[in-house]
Structures are given as structure tokens and as C-alpha cells.
Image (tube, rainbow, N blue to C red; front, side):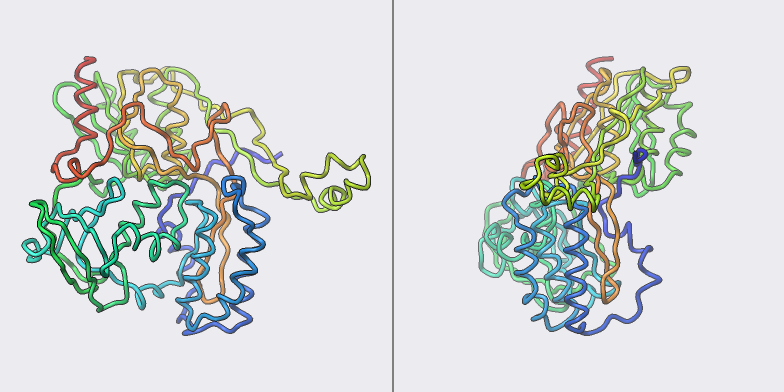
Length: 458
């Protein structure tokens, strides 16, 4: 049996940049037809054997899509277009841990954006910041209603969304809005805004922000302080701890160094809103200090292949005694986690049990979601915010011709009782939705709500 797998990778492309950096030289302007076909076929093969979520895209016939993309990739005129076609194919899988990565430096040659920061709420693109000096032309708080003369939502559905691999609809739209104004470097982004006072304006901004140091005029938005862990007191006896990433084991040491102070609190707020994941081991080590009993973790399964069983399953129609092997032939056989669930041992002799509010949101992903699975059965824990990213797993990484790479999610995690959260996101106990009003407010509505709820309990 396979041993328990404890890694759940972060969602950012930066998390793998160092893995491939040493392998990448100068990117070819265009790959040969043989390289293009090999890369596509390698991707198709690894996905076909290893992808853990085909049942979540039941309308997709991946073999047919592979055949459709053969002429598409062969028709590409440069390496960037080739990788774009791979991204378009990959988007049909609708999984946040299955991705295509450009060769290092390639996207910078073909892609840039204006000095405009956007946030998504209710499928709207809200301007949260612009380069200083543009605030009169594009007031922060404006909404983008059209791009290139086309209604925003129609534009995103046609030009942006087809290239995004996302497990959940809310992250799909969040990503689409973030990328809405991307385009060829040193070209003009042309879009229509509705200002906070209701005026409609046509604006143009150069796409040149990728490599410049820019001072922004912005609406204040909740954000990480850039450190692995942030600790502070929020007045009275309420401690605030932001856990901003489980990718580095140093976060456990940081938590332990502050634990003496944390354990003096009468109420605790844990902020996971900017935690994109990392190692489930690190997540579990931290929550073990805050649990009053041992905690069941996620269970998992992974596609299972045994060539001989696949051969027997293929002839099950002729030989009834081979019926048990049919799932191998149909690609629906699974390897399950060794135990019913992973059990995390609580530090019962030194734990800290107080009312605890956990702030979550659309950037809470992967191992941070595994943290929430552990916490699910703790009565003193309450989650506040928006549904999480909805993606975790153990991806396999594979190099592609031209210096890029792809990853395929091979492991399917669920709650101990089998409840799915990949593809849906983990819903908070107290929902605080992101709206046009909350984005414009300059307030941290999620933290404020948690603080009010917690103060009422103390």
C-alpha cells in the first residue's frame, strides 16, 4: 500500500520556478513539428494515466480533445502560441493543480499589463489601484464595463477564460478579472469604466507595468504583510496570527517562537486568507497546538494502473471471471489511503483552547485547505469569510520541449467522511461576501466581523 502523502502544493507558478530555472536556456522562436507533437502527446499521456478528477468533467472526452489539438499545435507559429494552445487544452480539465508553465522568460516577450490593479466581486472588475497620476482619469473604485468595446463578461468568456484552469467558478472569475487587461507589451489597453460617481469614460493605458517600479494610488485592501507569519494583539486579550504559507517549514518555528504569547490570549484569530498552501505536515504541526483531541485529516485516492489487470479487464465481456478487473480497463480503478484517515496527534499537555476564528477566502488553497479539514471537528473553531480556492493534491511535474513544464494532479483528497471540497471550495461558517461596496470600503470586513463575533463571546 502507498504511504500517506503529506504534500499539497501551492497554486502559484512561482512555486516551481526554481525547479526548472537551471534547465532553461534561450527559448526557441519556434519548435519543430516533432517537438510540438511530442510535447502534446506527453501531456495527453500523463493526464490520461494520472489525472484524479475526470469524473468532475463528465462532458469531456479527453482523447477526442487530444486529436482536435494536434492540428492546432502544429499550426502555431512560435513557441508562445504553442504553449497557449496547451493552456487552452489544459483548461478543459478544470483543475487548479493541473497546469501548463511557460519556459522561463517567454511570457515577458509576449505579455504585459497596464499599471491598474483589479479585484473581482460578483463578476465585476473593480479598479483598486492605479499608477500615481492616473487617479483622476481612472478613479479607484471604478468598475470596468467593457474591454475593446465588448461587454466585460462577454470579453472574458471569449478571450480570457478559455485559457484558465480552475477547479471552481469563483476562482475562474477571480483569475479572469485579474488577467482582463493583459496583452502584447507596449500596446494600449482600451476599456470603458464607470466611475464611483456614475460617469462612463473611455480610457487607454499602456501595457508596460511588468518590469517597472510603480507607485500606486489605491483603495486599501486586506493583504499579507509579506512574512511567513504575522503576530499582533488586537486589543484586550485577542491574539491575531496570520499564517501566510505552509511551503516553508520555518513557519512552524515562527509559530513556536510566538506560542508563549499566543497561549496567553483569551481569544484567537488565525488568518489563512493569503495562504496558498505548501506542506500539510507544517499545517498539521501548527494546528496540533490548538486542538483538544486528535484530529482526523483528509482521506485520499489516486488512479491505479496494473497492466496485466487492464488486459484482463479488456476481455471481461468474453470471460465473466475477469469482471473484477474491468475498472482497470476503464480507467476507474483507485489506490486508497492506507488508513481510513490521517490522524493528527494533538499536543494535549501544552495545547491552547480558546474561541478561535479562522479567516478564509479565495486565496486559501491546497495545504491551507487541509488545515481546515483538520479543524472541521473542533467546536471552538469558527471560519469567517469567503469559500476557499477549492484545489489541493499531489501533482506530478514533467518537462516539456522548449523549456516549459506541466503538472498533473494525481491525488484526490476529501474530508474523512468522503465529502468533496476540491472543485467546490470550503464554505465558511460565517459568510462575508466580497461585493462592490466591501471592495470600495477601505475596511477589512472579514477581520472586523470575526473580531465582533469573538468579542461577544469573551
